[in-house]
Image (cartoon, rainbow over all chains, first blue to last red; front, side, top):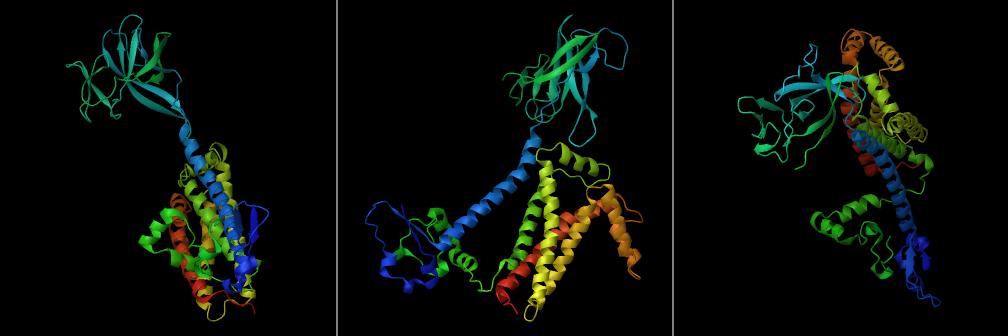
Length: 201
Length: 236
């Protein structure tokens, strides 16, 4: 590679450049020549330094914003209701085949706020002696809250008219998949909700 | 860069930088907006022979301001200007936010650095007599911007809502309160009431992130435009 430094020629102006300067011949090598002017080198250096600064600033500015957005949803077990009919502050879930509105309350740490209770509405159905279904009470279309229509035995979404049957399957409207469900377990007569799972479409 | 342009195609010195081949996008933009020539005129401005390293203080102060603006916008994603959350949000930025401590310290140290650079810049202009006619107006704009920069520092100091910031602001507001006649009213206006509290924090925040940046940007545009118009002063 043949490099020609032309800083002086640039400053002196084109008129002072000799013909030999304009057409340097390298008889020993046929490699393509690269011309580096003083100005070109300075522009390149300034450009690289500027690029490094912009990159560093971008990393320092964007990393906190992107990384702080990547938090995971809480999956701790949270009490939903009592299943043995005993009286407590929790809802009574002893009846079979009924859709009962309940709440999951978890202690959530939200960024800089002190840990606080966060309540999520759910619907609980006792299917049998040992079986439960805990539905997320939000429509799978765009997340609007659902209401249980006991007379029609259906879940209804007021936002866009999504309708689900008591088993959580879509019967009308725009929802793309059945209702989402929580993991569940029973311990000491109390039903607990775990992680939320998206139903298959 | 410019590895393919032969000598015969070399444009004149005035348009050399911006006039190089930059691909079809650049050509298409220039064809529609005619930006090649004005950009070249700006970028290829000749400087006098007398330029030395100490002429860079102003530009470095401006760079510090750019860093402060970028990190400040990023911090605004996490900081809460409320007495019950300010301290916790700052502690969370420092301790839990990924690269949060880096972000906040970039802002802090750039602020310190900017003050130093601004003072160095002013001393250079003063010692070289660069403020003299015809550049008096630019000196005055610079003095206004000095006050703006110091106001940035004063308002920003309170925002972490720690003991140091709280009492420093108390002292600062009381100094403002010692101005004859107007003082008590000035202090009340700064505090947003008789005592330093929620409204003080909120108005210091609003001034820090909305008012002062706008004023400083206007000042910078005037400052740079006048330097370009009048050229850099020859030394005494």
